[in-house]
Length: 496
Ligand SMILES: Cc1cc2nc3c(=O)[nH]c(=O)nc-3n(C[C@H](O)[C@H](O)[C@H](O)COP(=O)(O)OP(=O)(O)OC[C@H]3O[C@@H](n4cnc5c(N)ncnc54)[C@H](O)[C@@H]3O)c2cc1C
Image 1: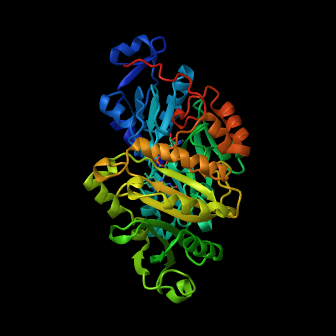
Image 2 (image 1 turned 90 degrees about the vertical axis):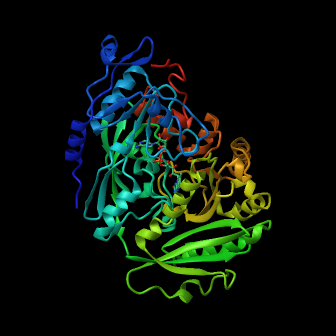
Image 3 (image 1 turned 135 degrees about the horizontal axis):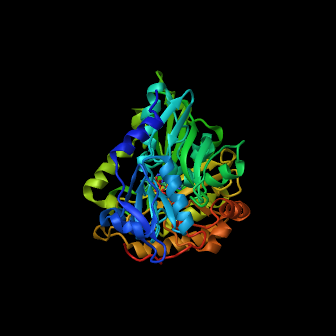
């Protein structure tokens, strides 16, 4: 099975013209048509360089709908060379640049005020060879899974929502219910091709330029743009036995989660909190687990008979592997139909030390109401084993078992939820407590973060981040929306 990378690029390139023709370094503005002759010419591209209002507005927004930074141009690359050529152009003129996958960050992480946004979605080729897949960074996980499953293969770790770009999740880490076995998505990468902040194409792997490989994975786009990845695949089963098991409290939930994470009996393990039914105050908790199988379903009593869930509350069913992996799709379609999918999402995502999880989460939940997360808000709580998490820039506490705790808030005031501002202030306060306990943010949410916070966040890995930045992006043009390093020209570009 193969989708040819090169042929596809050529075909796309023939179909698309170029709009912007130059850049005026004195006025710091893009030029189009014949006006471009007076400035520095934009190199020939096979893709499209746009500065229409609609394109700029789309690139000034994300899934959070909280932060809006307007770029001056948007590149839809027709090839990897387009990315390299335009990054070199921006490097020479000190124009800030950000790659945008599916824009599902929630706080402007893929935005760039006055610079260039590169929409990676046009680079989405996928090729499967043996037990490896080579993908362009703009491909989505859903497309990869559709390509691998007919061959009996799957990426080892899938995120809960499959419509995220592979480059976007490899830039942050990528965790899911199989991470207890296989680590994060960044732990399953064999090789990368990147475009550095000087516009150089470079291949890297654990053996070839290992310092670049390490700095790119979960590196938040600070030293290079990821354009291609070779990923490990695993045999996939056809079916999944799916379990929902309810618990009355955080300690009851986490005790069983720890136990089953450590003995590895489930293929997939997550957990959530939800309001107690009937509109009363308080929360109930559940394990969501799965056992993968082909023909004979697993023995339920062997898997859950010794667990301390509330008897009679268990929900058990069978799903195909793809339907299980894509289980959020119906809920997403529903939220899109009600419009809540497009409301602000001030998310908090943190990794907690296992030893502090029960105390911290119990105290947060005691003060939390549905107004704090919104009617369609989701609360995640599930364990990860740090022995499987090997990439140093994905920062997790220094304990064997850590927990992902996420308040996936929706600020929809017409449904009685608090405003986005109030939720962000709450995120800030919780983040301080989490850092005090030795926890870290998973940097996909909406937490105002200073440069000194970032130094603390990366801790012993900070020199790695700084060295890679100096070496591969010496003019500091890449991914300013993360707020880790000063931007070269913050907000200085006039309109076109
Ligand atoms: C509904 C939903 C469900 C989610 N579920 C999960 C989950 O189960 N597990 C999980 O781990 N995360 C999850 N996330 C978080 C998600 O992994 C991150 O928000 C991720 O960054 C989104 O991917 P994206 O393609 O939208 O990236 P974007 O938001 O477009 O980009 C994220 C960051 O990476 C940079 N970037 C993007 N592409 C590249 C590239 N090719 N090279 C270099 N830098 C790049 C951007 O500049 C930006 O800084 C979820 C998010 C949403 C909205």
